[in-house]
Length: 155
Image 1 (cartoon, rainbow, N blue to C red):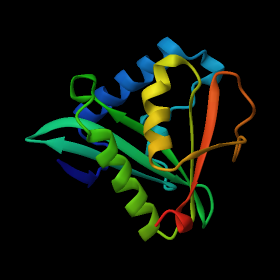
Image 2 (image 1 turned 180 degrees about the vertical axis):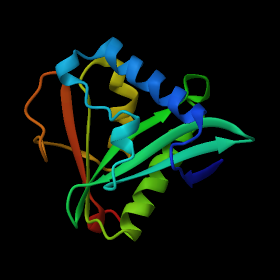
Image 3 (image 1 turned 180 degrees about the horizontal axis):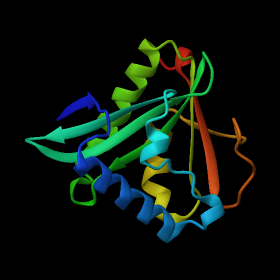
């Protein structure tokens, strides 16, 4: 699997992200959908990676800087037909390494509280993420859970 910084110009990325947004709309009420759209992922505070295998887009992830020491994981996704093969773990390892290289000391994320998101929560838990209060501009939401990882203590 090749993971690379992506400028979001490939139409396959746009299609992939649109599927992600539609999935989120199908399981989360509109006020609880926090996935960034294509334009949001192009913001200067966001680094976006795509993951490819033999020319096939299999996943993506993004890191949004919140301040000089804290970043948020955004748009972590593996295509439906490639799930269960360890790609999400490889993407998450990549994000953790890149965040450390960028000088972040803490990573946080928001994900859904519904059963649909159980695999994501279990993945993050397995990497040491712990449940926390809402961070940044998030508010308490029964459809969201918040997790955080102290990178300095996770080496």
